[in-house]
Length: 352
Image (cartoon, rainbow, N blue to C red; front, side, top):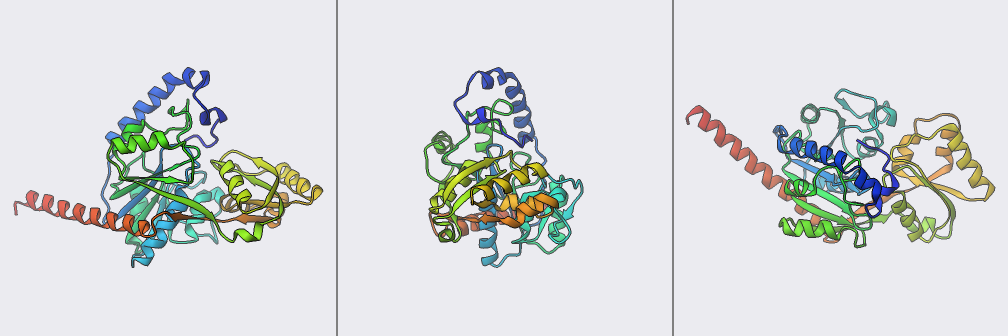
Protein backbone atom coordinates (compact mmCIF):
# COMPACT_ATOMS: atom_id res chain seq x y z
CA UNK A 1 0.00 0.00 0.00
CA UNK A 2 1.21 3.49 -0.82
CA UNK A 3 2.10 5.43 2.33
CA UNK A 4 2.95 8.85 0.88
CA UNK A 5 0.23 10.15 -1.42
CA UNK A 6 1.44 12.33 -4.31
CA UNK A 7 -0.08 15.83 -4.16
CA UNK A 8 -1.73 15.44 -7.59
CA UNK A 9 -3.97 12.75 -6.14
CA UNK A 10 -5.87 15.41 -4.19
CA UNK A 11 -6.65 17.83 -7.03
CA UNK A 12 -8.67 17.53 -10.24
CA UNK A 13 -7.45 14.64 -12.40
CA UNK A 14 -4.71 15.87 -14.72
CA UNK A 15 -2.38 14.31 -17.32
CA UNK A 16 -0.56 12.34 -14.61
CA UNK A 17 -3.72 10.60 -13.44
CA UNK A 18 -4.82 9.86 -17.01
CA UNK A 19 -1.34 8.64 -18.03
CA UNK A 20 -1.52 6.15 -15.17
CA UNK A 21 -5.09 5.14 -16.00
CA UNK A 22 -4.12 1.75 -17.55
CA UNK A 23 -2.20 0.86 -14.38
CA UNK A 24 -5.13 2.07 -12.27
CA UNK A 25 -7.51 -0.09 -14.30
CA UNK A 26 -5.36 -3.16 -13.65
CA UNK A 27 -5.04 -2.34 -9.94
CA UNK A 28 -8.79 -1.80 -9.72
CA UNK A 29 -9.54 -5.08 -11.50
CA UNK A 30 -7.32 -6.98 -9.08
CA UNK A 31 -8.90 -5.19 -6.12
CA UNK A 32 -12.41 -5.99 -7.40
CA UNK A 33 -11.52 -9.65 -7.86
CA UNK A 34 -9.99 -9.81 -4.39
CA UNK A 35 -13.12 -8.34 -2.83
CA UNK A 36 -15.47 -10.60 -4.82
CA UNK A 37 -13.49 -13.73 -4.03
CA UNK A 38 -12.39 -12.87 -0.50
CA UNK A 39 -12.46 -15.79 1.97
CA UNK A 40 -14.55 -13.87 4.53
CA UNK A 41 -13.84 -16.51 7.16
CA UNK A 42 -16.21 -16.42 10.10
CA UNK A 43 -15.15 -15.86 13.70
CA UNK A 44 -17.27 -16.48 16.79
CA UNK A 45 -17.62 -12.85 17.84
CA UNK A 46 -19.23 -9.73 16.38
CA UNK A 47 -16.92 -7.93 13.92
CA UNK A 48 -17.22 -4.22 13.14
CA UNK A 49 -14.89 -2.97 10.42
CA UNK A 50 -13.99 0.71 10.10
CA UNK A 51 -12.44 1.43 6.72
CA UNK A 52 -12.00 4.14 4.13
CA UNK A 53 -12.19 4.39 0.36
CA UNK A 54 -8.76 5.94 -0.05
CA UNK A 55 -5.20 5.81 1.19
CA UNK A 56 -4.95 7.56 4.57
CA UNK A 57 -6.35 10.64 6.22
CA UNK A 58 -10.10 9.96 6.44
CA UNK A 59 -10.48 9.61 10.22
CA UNK A 60 -10.97 5.88 10.67
CA UNK A 61 -8.77 5.54 13.77
CA UNK A 62 -10.67 8.19 15.82
CA UNK A 63 -13.87 6.50 14.64
CA UNK A 64 -12.66 3.09 15.78
CA UNK A 65 -11.68 4.53 19.17
CA UNK A 66 -15.11 6.12 19.63
CA UNK A 67 -16.87 2.86 18.76
CA UNK A 68 -14.62 0.93 21.13
CA UNK A 69 -15.67 3.18 24.00
CA UNK A 70 -19.32 2.65 23.12
CA UNK A 71 -18.91 -1.14 22.91
CA UNK A 72 -17.38 -1.10 26.40
CA UNK A 73 -20.33 0.97 27.68
CA UNK A 74 -22.66 -1.67 26.20
CA UNK A 75 -21.01 -4.31 28.38
CA UNK A 76 -18.63 -5.90 25.88
CA UNK A 77 -14.92 -6.55 26.19
CA UNK A 78 -13.79 -5.00 22.88
CA UNK A 79 -10.46 -5.41 21.15
CA UNK A 80 -8.79 -4.06 18.03
CA UNK A 81 -7.49 -6.00 15.05
CA UNK A 82 -4.93 -4.32 12.80
CA UNK A 83 -2.49 -5.34 10.10
CA UNK A 84 0.17 -3.24 11.81
CA UNK A 85 1.08 -1.14 8.80
CA UNK A 86 4.54 0.40 9.14
CA UNK A 87 5.72 -2.18 11.67
CA UNK A 88 8.28 -4.92 11.18
CA UNK A 89 6.43 -7.78 12.90
CA UNK A 90 5.17 -10.39 10.46
CA UNK A 91 3.49 -12.69 12.97
CA UNK A 92 0.46 -12.49 15.25
CA UNK A 93 1.26 -10.28 18.23
CA UNK A 94 -0.62 -8.68 21.09
CA UNK A 95 0.57 -5.07 21.26
CA UNK A 96 2.47 -4.34 24.45
CA UNK A 97 3.14 -0.61 24.88
CA UNK A 98 5.94 -1.34 27.37
CA UNK A 99 7.76 -3.57 24.90
CA UNK A 100 6.65 -2.60 21.41
CA UNK A 101 7.38 0.56 19.44
CA UNK A 102 6.06 2.00 16.19
CA UNK A 103 8.92 0.32 14.33
CA UNK A 104 7.57 -3.03 15.58
CA UNK A 105 3.81 -2.75 15.28
CA UNK A 106 3.08 0.57 13.51
CA UNK A 107 1.91 3.87 14.98
CA UNK A 108 -1.86 3.39 14.86
CA UNK A 109 -1.86 0.11 16.84
CA UNK A 110 0.04 1.88 19.63
CA UNK A 111 -2.74 4.47 19.85
CA UNK A 112 -5.42 1.77 19.80
CA UNK A 113 -3.63 -0.23 22.49
CA UNK A 114 -3.99 2.71 24.89
CA UNK A 115 -7.74 2.05 24.95
CA UNK A 116 -8.20 -1.70 24.45
CA UNK A 117 -6.30 -4.95 23.76
CA UNK A 118 -4.89 -4.77 20.24
CA UNK A 119 -3.54 -7.48 17.98
CA UNK A 120 -1.46 -6.91 14.86
CA UNK A 121 -1.29 -9.61 12.24
CA UNK A 122 -0.87 -9.80 8.46
CA UNK A 123 -3.27 -12.77 8.71
CA UNK A 124 -6.41 -11.13 10.04
CA UNK A 125 -8.18 -14.44 10.74
CA UNK A 126 -5.27 -15.58 12.90
CA UNK A 127 -5.32 -12.18 14.59
CA UNK A 128 -9.03 -12.51 15.33
CA UNK A 129 -8.45 -15.93 16.88
CA UNK A 130 -5.78 -14.43 19.10
CA UNK A 131 -8.22 -11.79 20.33
CA UNK A 132 -10.84 -14.45 21.07
CA UNK A 133 -8.25 -16.44 23.04
CA UNK A 134 -7.60 -13.31 25.12
CA UNK A 135 -11.27 -13.06 26.09
CA UNK A 136 -12.33 -10.40 23.59
CA UNK A 137 -16.02 -10.65 22.66
CA UNK A 138 -16.34 -7.71 20.24
CA UNK A 139 -13.78 -7.17 17.48
CA UNK A 140 -13.13 -3.77 15.91
CA UNK A 141 -11.09 -3.83 12.72
CA UNK A 142 -9.09 -0.71 12.04
CA UNK A 143 -8.89 -0.91 8.25
CA UNK A 144 -8.91 -4.20 6.31
CA UNK A 145 -12.18 -3.50 4.52
CA UNK A 146 -10.80 -4.14 1.03
CA UNK A 147 -9.13 -7.42 2.03
CA UNK A 148 -12.32 -8.86 3.57
CA UNK A 149 -10.25 -11.71 5.03
CA UNK A 150 -12.87 -12.28 7.72
CA UNK A 151 -16.63 -11.78 7.73
CA UNK A 152 -17.79 -8.31 8.81
CA UNK A 153 -21.06 -8.06 10.67
CA UNK A 154 -21.03 -4.33 10.06
CA UNK A 155 -18.71 -2.25 7.87
CA UNK A 156 -18.56 1.51 8.29
CA UNK A 157 -16.72 3.45 5.61
CA UNK A 158 -15.53 6.94 6.51
CA UNK A 159 -14.83 9.84 4.17
CA UNK A 160 -13.44 13.30 4.88
CA UNK A 161 -15.89 16.04 3.86
CA UNK A 162 -13.12 18.46 2.88
CA UNK A 163 -10.96 15.98 0.96
CA UNK A 164 -13.39 13.42 -0.40
CA UNK A 165 -11.76 10.84 -2.65
CA UNK A 166 -9.33 13.24 -4.31
CA UNK A 167 -9.22 12.98 -8.09
CA UNK A 168 -11.36 9.82 -7.92
CA UNK A 169 -8.80 7.63 -9.68
CA UNK A 170 -7.61 4.29 -8.38
CA UNK A 171 -4.02 3.67 -7.24
CA UNK A 172 -1.48 4.54 -8.71
CA UNK A 173 -3.27 7.37 -10.57
CA UNK A 174 -5.21 8.44 -7.48
CA UNK A 175 -5.86 7.57 -3.84
CA UNK A 176 -8.86 5.23 -4.29
CA UNK A 177 -8.19 1.66 -3.13
CA UNK A 178 -10.76 -0.20 -5.25
CA UNK A 179 -13.63 0.64 -7.63
CA UNK A 180 -16.09 2.83 -5.74
CA UNK A 181 -19.20 0.84 -6.66
CA UNK A 182 -17.62 -2.38 -5.45
CA UNK A 183 -16.58 -0.76 -2.19
CA UNK A 184 -20.01 0.77 -1.63
CA UNK A 185 -21.74 -2.50 -2.44
CA UNK A 186 -19.94 -4.18 0.44
CA UNK A 187 -20.39 -1.33 2.94
CA UNK A 188 -23.07 -1.21 5.62
CA UNK A 189 -23.07 2.58 6.03
CA UNK A 190 -21.21 5.78 5.19
CA UNK A 191 -19.85 8.21 7.78
CA UNK A 192 -18.96 11.72 6.55
CA UNK A 193 -16.48 13.47 8.85
CA UNK A 194 -16.21 17.25 9.04
CA UNK A 195 -17.60 20.10 6.94
CA UNK A 196 -17.25 20.62 3.20
CA UNK A 197 -18.58 19.46 -0.15
CA UNK A 198 -15.73 17.25 -1.41
CA UNK A 199 -17.55 14.12 -0.25
CA UNK A 200 -20.74 14.96 -2.18
CA UNK A 201 -19.95 12.53 -5.06
CA UNK A 202 -19.49 9.73 -2.51
CA UNK A 203 -22.74 10.70 -0.79
CA UNK A 204 -24.56 10.46 -4.13
CA UNK A 205 -23.11 7.01 -4.77
CA UNK A 206 -24.18 5.90 -1.28
CA UNK A 207 -27.66 7.29 -1.87
CA UNK A 208 -28.04 5.38 -5.15
CA UNK A 209 -26.85 2.24 -3.38
CA UNK A 210 -29.45 2.81 -0.63
CA UNK A 211 -26.75 2.96 2.04
CA UNK A 212 -27.47 4.99 5.19
CA UNK A 213 -25.41 8.18 5.51
CA UNK A 214 -24.31 9.67 8.82
CA UNK A 215 -22.17 12.61 9.95
CA UNK A 216 -19.54 13.30 12.59
CA UNK A 217 -16.74 15.76 13.29
CA UNK A 218 -13.37 15.77 15.02
CA UNK A 219 -13.20 17.92 18.15
CA UNK A 220 -10.01 19.06 19.86
CA UNK A 221 -9.55 18.05 23.49
CA UNK A 222 -8.79 21.03 25.79
CA UNK A 223 -8.80 23.59 22.95
CA UNK A 224 -8.36 26.55 25.31
CA UNK A 225 -4.83 25.41 26.20
CA UNK A 226 -3.74 26.28 22.64
CA UNK A 227 -5.52 29.63 22.33
CA UNK A 228 -3.18 32.51 21.54
CA UNK A 229 -0.07 30.30 21.37
CA UNK A 230 2.49 30.94 18.62
CA UNK A 231 3.34 27.52 17.27
CA UNK A 232 5.31 25.49 14.77
CA UNK A 233 3.02 22.64 13.77
CA UNK A 234 4.40 19.49 12.17
CA UNK A 235 2.77 16.25 11.09
CA UNK A 236 3.47 13.06 9.18
CA UNK A 237 -0.07 11.82 8.67
CA UNK A 238 -2.37 11.17 5.73
CA UNK A 239 -3.87 14.66 5.77
CA UNK A 240 -1.66 17.20 7.60
CA UNK A 241 -3.88 20.10 6.50
CA UNK A 242 -6.72 18.75 8.63
CA UNK A 243 -4.42 18.85 11.65
CA UNK A 244 -3.25 22.40 10.88
CA UNK A 245 -6.85 23.52 10.44
CA UNK A 246 -7.91 21.96 13.74
CA UNK A 247 -5.04 23.71 15.50
CA UNK A 248 -6.00 27.08 14.01
CA UNK A 249 -9.57 26.42 15.10
CA UNK A 250 -8.44 26.51 18.73
CA UNK A 251 -7.24 30.09 18.31
CA UNK A 252 -3.58 29.15 18.06
CA UNK A 253 -1.37 31.26 15.79
CA UNK A 254 0.25 28.73 13.45
CA UNK A 255 3.39 30.61 12.41
CA UNK A 256 4.96 27.66 10.59
CA UNK A 257 3.77 24.33 9.17
CA UNK A 258 5.86 21.30 8.31
CA UNK A 259 4.32 18.35 6.44
CA UNK A 260 5.88 14.93 5.96
CA UNK A 261 4.67 11.72 4.30
CA UNK A 262 2.25 9.47 6.16
CA UNK A 263 4.04 7.19 8.67
CA UNK A 264 7.31 9.09 8.10
CA UNK A 265 10.03 8.30 10.62
CA UNK A 266 11.87 11.48 11.58
CA UNK A 267 15.62 11.60 11.19
CA UNK A 268 18.15 13.41 13.36
CA UNK A 269 18.59 16.28 10.91
CA UNK A 270 14.84 16.81 10.55
CA UNK A 271 14.35 16.79 14.32
CA UNK A 272 17.24 19.22 14.83
CA UNK A 273 15.80 21.57 12.20
CA UNK A 274 12.37 21.58 13.84
CA UNK A 275 13.85 22.22 17.29
CA UNK A 276 16.13 25.01 16.04
CA UNK A 277 13.39 26.68 13.99
CA UNK A 278 11.02 26.70 16.95
CA UNK A 279 13.68 28.08 19.29
CA UNK A 280 14.77 30.77 16.84
CA UNK A 281 11.25 32.17 16.46
CA UNK A 282 10.13 31.36 20.03
CA UNK A 283 7.43 28.94 18.92
CA UNK A 284 5.85 25.96 20.65
CA UNK A 285 6.17 22.63 18.83
CA UNK A 286 2.80 20.94 18.28
CA UNK A 287 2.21 17.58 16.63
CA UNK A 288 -0.34 14.74 16.44
CA UNK A 289 -0.91 11.70 18.64
CA UNK A 290 0.10 9.45 15.76
CA UNK A 291 3.38 11.27 15.28
CA UNK A 292 4.14 11.15 18.98
CA UNK A 293 3.60 7.38 18.90
CA UNK A 294 6.45 7.21 16.38
CA UNK A 295 8.69 9.58 18.33
CA UNK A 296 8.45 7.79 21.68
CA UNK A 297 10.99 5.08 20.80
CA UNK A 298 13.61 7.53 19.56
CA UNK A 299 17.00 8.69 20.77
CA UNK A 300 19.17 11.75 20.28
CA UNK A 301 17.58 14.78 18.63
CA UNK A 302 14.40 12.85 17.80
CA UNK A 303 13.92 12.05 21.50
CA UNK A 304 14.53 15.73 22.27
CA UNK A 305 11.90 16.67 19.70
CA UNK A 306 9.39 14.36 21.41
CA UNK A 307 10.18 15.89 24.80
CA UNK A 308 9.72 19.45 23.54
CA UNK A 309 6.50 18.79 21.59
CA UNK A 310 2.88 19.01 22.70
CA UNK A 311 0.16 16.84 21.22
CA UNK A 312 -3.09 18.14 19.78
CA UNK A 313 -5.52 15.41 20.81
CA UNK A 314 -8.83 14.99 18.99
CA UNK A 315 -11.91 12.87 19.51
CA UNK A 316 -14.78 11.96 17.21
CA UNK A 317 -18.22 13.34 17.97
CA UNK A 318 -21.23 11.97 16.13
CA UNK A 319 -23.97 14.41 15.10
CA UNK A 320 -26.55 12.02 16.56
CA UNK A 321 -25.72 11.34 20.20
CA UNK A 322 -26.93 7.74 20.05
CA UNK A 323 -25.27 6.92 16.72
CA UNK A 324 -22.31 4.99 18.12
CA UNK A 325 -24.69 2.74 20.05
CA UNK A 326 -26.73 2.26 16.87
CA UNK A 327 -23.63 0.94 15.08
CA UNK A 328 -22.88 -1.42 17.97
CA UNK A 329 -26.48 -2.70 18.04
CA UNK A 330 -26.56 -3.26 14.28
CA UNK A 331 -23.32 -5.22 14.51
CA UNK A 332 -24.79 -7.45 17.22
CA UNK A 333 -28.02 -7.99 15.27
CA UNK A 334 -26.07 -9.01 12.19
CA UNK A 335 -23.86 -11.32 14.26
CA UNK A 336 -26.88 -13.09 15.74
CA UNK A 337 -28.33 -13.62 12.26
CA UNK A 338 -24.97 -15.01 11.14
CA UNK A 339 -24.89 -17.40 14.10
CA UNK A 340 -28.43 -18.58 13.34
CA UNK A 341 -27.61 -19.12 9.64
CA UNK A 342 -24.47 -21.09 10.57
CA UNK A 343 -26.46 -23.28 12.96
CA UNK A 344 -29.12 -23.97 10.33
CA UNK A 345 -26.45 -24.83 7.76
CA UNK A 346 -24.80 -27.23 10.19
CA UNK A 347 -28.15 -28.90 10.92
CA UNK A 348 -28.78 -29.41 7.21
CA UNK A 349 -25.40 -31.02 6.82
CA UNK A 350 -26.15 -33.33 9.74
CA UNK A 351 -29.58 -34.07 8.31
CA UNK A 352 -31.40 -32.78 11.37
